[in-house]
Image 1 (tube, rainbow, N blue to C red):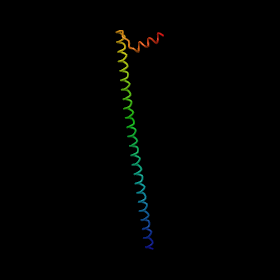
Image 2 (cartoon, rainbow, N blue to C red):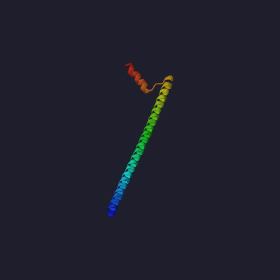
Image 3 (cartoon, rainbow, N blue to C red):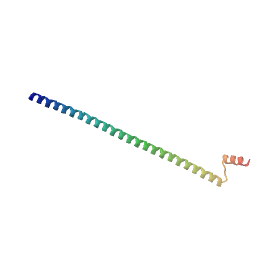
Image 4 (cartoon, rainbow, N blue to C red):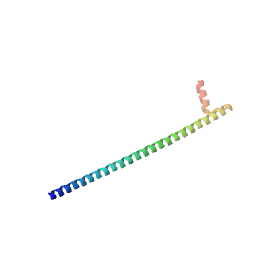
Length: 102
């Protein structure tokens, strides 16, 4: 009788140990999954930040180019105005006038 009781306790102890080991493996698996998810989220945030920065740089470059073009157009217009005031016309303006006279 005592032998059977000892065997029963031993098997319960083994069952408990196996259960604890299983729980430990599951806990480790959950932790790895959480770490993987955190890393994925961190990489996604970094990717979005880089994309936002890239779009900002492109927008700034387009704005600079546009400003440069506007400045050039204003400069050309001022030059045309000065020539007009001095009574000078460019070849193209003379050509345009000849076209409109026809």
